[in-house]
Length: 400
Image (cartoon, rainbow, N blue to C red; front, side):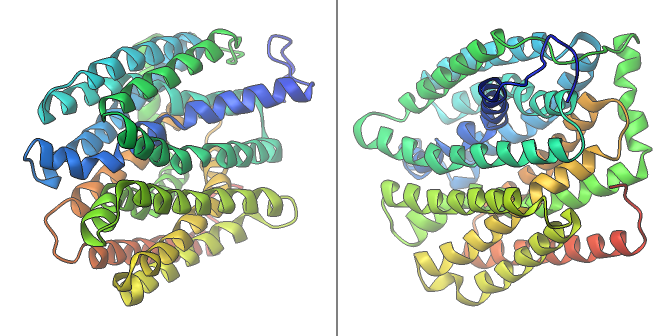
């Protein structure tokens, strides 16, 4: 742990507060996407737009979010984490209010782009702050703690959205997101700067850090492997409401419960990782997680169309597998770089969301058998990352 007195945290309550704040910052994408999921079918009907158009409120959010990650990372390496965070979260709050007042699909898409530009400051800089304050096994453990807490976001976000729709209108979903932004902003204002040594290079030179990262073969390989492993999850996020509400005929509330069940599997995977990380080699957890994605894809293709639970259980297996493998894989990615932590975190999450947007776009098309498409995506991605990961281990290419 960093010895700087400004953010030295020996007391458990102080450590708990910073972990909670980091988790909330990391959870911005989940709250920003999953709360609106129950409303997507009704928005499509209200505005007489196809799913592929309405889902642009998800896809454009992800693309914009990923692009701005590349901007916030180098800026934070040059000027510190705190000021970019305050700016980004303030923009997020303002854009959330605009989203709540949108009167058309295209207005909502435009305001979501602005919302994503602000939200991008949170996830990348929270991971960079984790690297600032913790190292080695301690960082890996903290990432697992954050993953456990963060998993509550996709669990409760659609339930909150479903209950808001039951008693209020969809607009209040964005008012609730704005309130979450205010809570995070207050937390950041109370947190001291975590970057001990800022880059003394000009901002243009700091931006060149991406060039250095792109030349880092080990880092790029790990980023691609870990990003592809998440593509099935993002495809599920975009297609879940159509599968459960339009396909299986469930209500918005029942959909939110099944989506929460899937999020519970993510949290269970992260908790399992937390329990096993001290007595099991992290590489074994990653291998088991990738193998679970392959098995889940096979089950979706064989039994996924038989009913809501026949689809939900294999999907939960996939999400559990991602939960158990993501904390050690994130740690392993960061271990491939010695500096440029902000840029490395930004490029990592940019790749996550860019490939995630590709999966969202694919699943949003007018497929007759959407479940089979999702199963195919999962199986292909699972086999690809498992085989690549095994080759990387055999050749001892990545640093641990």
